[in-house]
Every structure is written in C-alpha cells, then in structure tokens.
Image (cartoon, rainbow, N blue to C red; front, side):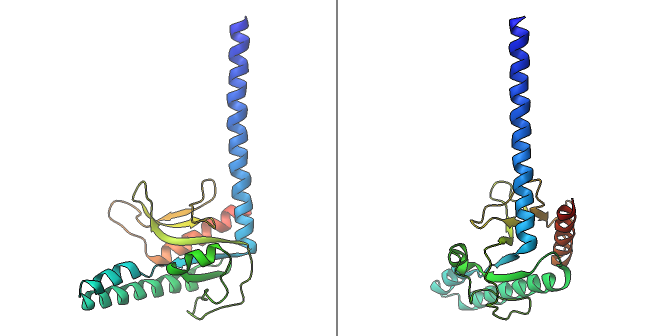
Length: 190
C-alpha cells in the first residue's frame, strides 16, 4: 500500500511539474507576442564586414567588393520582402555591426525603415530581434525571432520559418516573411 501511495505521489509531482513548465512557456510566449504587437520587430541585416576585411587584407579587393555588393543586394531583398509581405507590427532594420548598441537600448539613429531611410522615431523598449540565420546546433537555415540578447525564442511562440520546404525547394524571402506575418497573427489571435 505504501509503495502504491508513493508511486501516485511521484506521478502527481511529475505531472504537476510538467504542467507548470508548459504553462510557463505559454505565458512567456503570450508576453512576447503582445510585446511584438505593441512594439516592433527589429531585423538584423548582415554586413559581412569581417569576411570583406579579411579578403582586403589578403589583397583580394575584387572579391571583397563582390561580397559587399552581394550582401547589399541580399539586404535590399530582405527589406523589400518585409515592405511587401509583413503586416503584423512595425518593422525596422539595423546592421549587424550595431548589435551591441541595439542590445544596450541605444538604437536612435541606427534603425532604418522599409525604404532604407534612417528612422529615429522608434523609442520603445518593446521589441524582438529577427534575422535570417543558421541554427548553431542543427545548421537549419531559417528566419528566427530572438529575444533582446539574440537568443532564439521557443515554442509555442512561432519563432522560426524554415527556408527549405523540402529536400530541394527553398522559399523566397517574400514567402518566408508572408508566412511569418501569418503565423504571428494567428498566434496573437489565439
């Protein structure tokens, strides 16, 4: 009888802890979606400055310039995708070399709007970071939504949109951004 009572008590503790953890994750996700809806998404754009400088140091100026131009085109395409396909909340952009300033709350003059114009109107502490990136553990390429310290959020928050749909098909920036906007809206309305 004592063993049976002990087993029931242990199962209760396990179930209760699991329920509490799941509830905490839901509450955290709800706080994040409300913060995003009432604030903004700050999208970090890569500069490839380390690679460009390394190429220049090796005397590969032509390759460095090609990389700079390709990175600029990629950033322009990302901004265009948000301009045409993202409706969930305001969105601003910043370059990766300003990541520390953004984290410290010093984003005045460092943010751009969807037209690549410097925008100093945003002065809110309600924001999350978004970026096209690769998971450090799985090498998954996706658009990730991260907290203010650049740590990816967790489920149940819709924190990532994979770039690849299957083994061979890759989504366009517009498709990724449109799906992101849709999933954020659906999660917000739950």
